[in-house]
Length: 201
Ligand code: FES
Ligand code: FES
Image 1 (cartoon, rainbow, N blue to C red):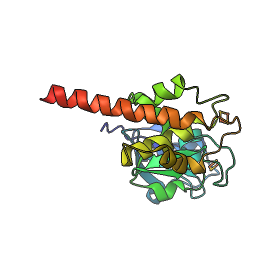
Image 2 (cartoon, rainbow, N blue to C red):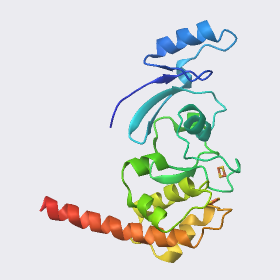
Image 3 (cartoon, rainbow, N blue to C red):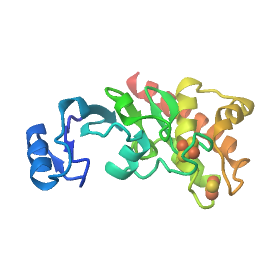
Image 4 (spheres, rainbow, N blue to C red):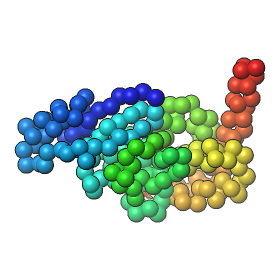
């Protein structure tokens, strides 16, 4: 894991290497704001990179990821836990980032669709191949849910896939395509695993 700790100003998103630099910046540049206190500092590992971030108590995880850290895949759609477009994987489980407070995620490991793509996961290829998106707004939420499913269950049935995707809504009606892409990604993962064992001997 890369340790690239950084301290993000909650008011202007300037990044600092040290907490004391962040505190001095806030006191100098945002005079009407409260000075940061260590209690507002959280550490998260996001897509394999460690982040130390000063957060406000009301920030959701979605706001932190999307608006502060520039990870745009967790989409804000309903903002009430009803659509799944903001899904990310936390500690191996799909969670709704619009309903999770950032302060509650201190110490957690998070994976977003950016991390899944960067890791070269076959879901990206099969989602494209099977045309699983029209406008694409819901797609990162489906992909993160699918990744968490395959990590837990490498041989899902179509019914298990449909069940796992039950919390993800798509206004463009792409539903029939997702099980096809996920079943093919499961096969590709097995082929990759076999290739790895052959190389390892
Ligand atoms: S935006 Fe989070 S569930 Fe809809
Ligand atoms: S592809 Fe448009 S909402 Fe799903």
